[in-house]
Length: 472
Image (cartoon, rainbow, N blue to C red; front, side, top):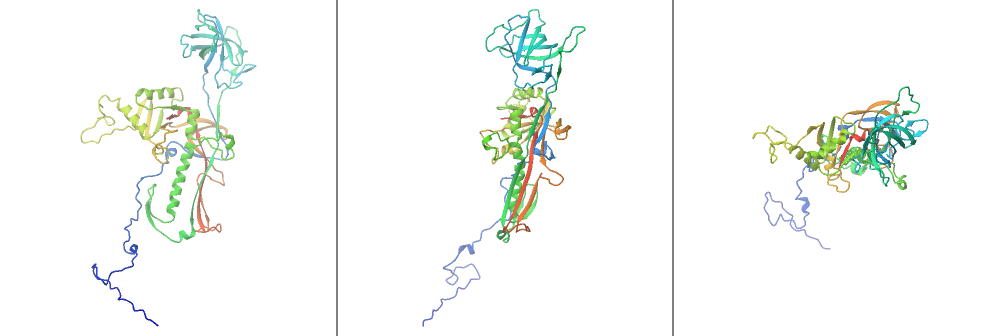
């Protein structure tokens, strides 16, 4: 039998001196050189949330239906811009045919179906469209030969001012009604009545969901992290750190889904999703679109002229990406005759002790406009930096409008932009969250984990979209 004789024992030194007795030949360096760690996360991206747009400009209200419907008023006066005739030059009378796309069936009650709002006895103004600028007449309507045509006898001694050619395409004119004239002792048997034409609009809510899960084993190993959250809270979190970010991400989706949603128009994919009408889709479908850069006051005047033809809302808010915001700043600065080189615009009473303000938050040009940056359009993980389908900003009218609520059965005052969420006496689906599983205090199943569920069911109502402007 042999006996192994151990070598000499290592003798630690009282000071950091390398000797033959305190040298280790087998050593895991991780046991000695432990890293210095910071308890607190460094917020290198600042505030990462992008929601707040709808909270600033809209409101939320409950709905108990799968379908939300409302009616928007049509124009009070009647004008057609796609009207043609083949009348001869200097003719005493002419028959015009209306081809405007939005002619409601049976809008006028004349005893027979009529699709135009022009009636016998009314006086009309006739003006040539582009390419036919010489045409200008006034006349009285004497007959309605068909559901989309009317005959006019002209007041002018020279008759019809058109060219008189019967070529194709025929001469195009615009026509609007400015009054009427009837003979003494006449009746209104042939006049008929004009029925109001409302645009019925609708939208449907969509269900937005998310989930966070953590296993029971991971919950048993606590690792604390000091955090500062986007909503201003400070403190320590462990496994719920990821849950907290899931919650913030879900809250952002509640807004971005309402902004970006589109209806499902692909019938092949109809079983996969219903879709909904979001802000951008509503403006592209029923609103105004401005394309290009705003480099001069005349560019913005084109927008104002368009607003004049719509609701003429007194106050409007511009939500813009950074580049478009700078373009408007530069455009406004150019109006300051003392701002050569950008030395004094923004804050016009600058001195050497005062910081120079090179930006604008609001201005007045026929209407009041307030300007702010929209973080969603700048965020590189969302719409920031997109090329295809890029959106530069949106003009939103401030205030509210009166609409006929199909569910309430009466007129109601509603913000131009608001969210409807599903709710009843027993179920509120505005923002639901619940815990399932068998960990973290939950006792609902045999799943060895904790699952935090998030759900909302909502739709965006864009009322009076003709008063909105989308910048592309």
